[in-house]
Length: 450
Image 1 (cartoon, one colour):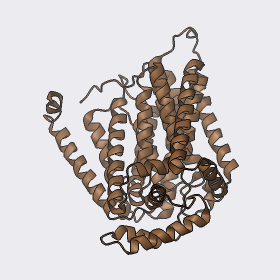
Image 2 (cartoon, one colour):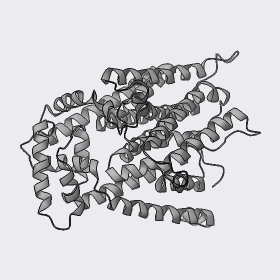
Image 3 (tube, rainbow, N blue to C red):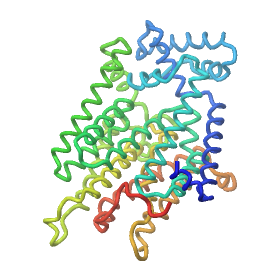
Image 4 (cartoon, rainbow, N blue to C red):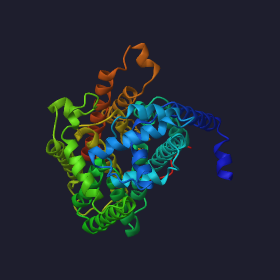
């Protein structure tokens, strides 16, 4: 309590805290006005399984039948305006998420859609807030600067507003990313390495689009030739994957649930790039792209990350006997995790606006407090201040867009993909050049200014 009292002696922190609390309330009320178009699909799948539905949620004909059944249920409900609205809109339920995601959805649902949607929004906002503040703290931000960064994310950040509107899982994924980053800062203890792998495995089984995070974490250990750490991490990933499959298959009462899901996603993924609303860079460059093209792009972008990581770690003259730098390993792993999120955004043919919520880890990495003494050179200022600020500003749905008569679909397509590309190239620069000239990078150190 003494520490809390000290914090609130600073009027800036007190004012920022009040503004964050009000912004959270405003965001939650904003969510209450939306029907949760994505959440509804997951909620129906979870609710149907809870009530022992005879339908296979991954069978196309069953999805039409469930849509019809839940539309009829909604019509007889009183005081369920959002459920009625979305049930009438949903003639089909595209249930393409993993069984594990539906199990998690059902875990926090009580069976009343209006209440469950409010709970989901509250959980999403809480996880988002904790994740941003935790990642900021781990990367040396002061309390005031952490709150100052959180404010525009809650109020104007377009992907956050989109995530609230549709009730998607991007804030939950961000929470898993933040937990992995926190575990990366705990040190090389086998418990933390295994836990990192475990959470990563669960995260990928929750939604496989973040598989590049797992690939880059494993690749980082290979580049550094730390094969024992690689083995422990991979063991954790395998344990997480197996646990997710077992729990969700038991919950569904179907041993072939994951096979059904894989067949469903394989049949639909090739057409992802045909969506006109997709904010996907690969689609803008190459047009509609099938599974092999998306996989090839993801592997190429991951390979490029690891090449730059290797390049930045090559020995300087007279430094071949230098001992491993644990602080640098930790920081590199954090950047690898953030880069994995960007690879997903750049390589997938279907990227909705709310997916770009996962640019937040890299924004926090590149905007971190300046650690070096002396004057700031032009290139680091450009890479760590100017370009990230431009990328962040372009993704804010602020009144400035109204003044500029911007903010349409074409604008957001350019803004989101360009921002992700800028952050990706800054990440490559950090691997190849920045960290090579900054050997004493500190991670999880207390910020100098509170």
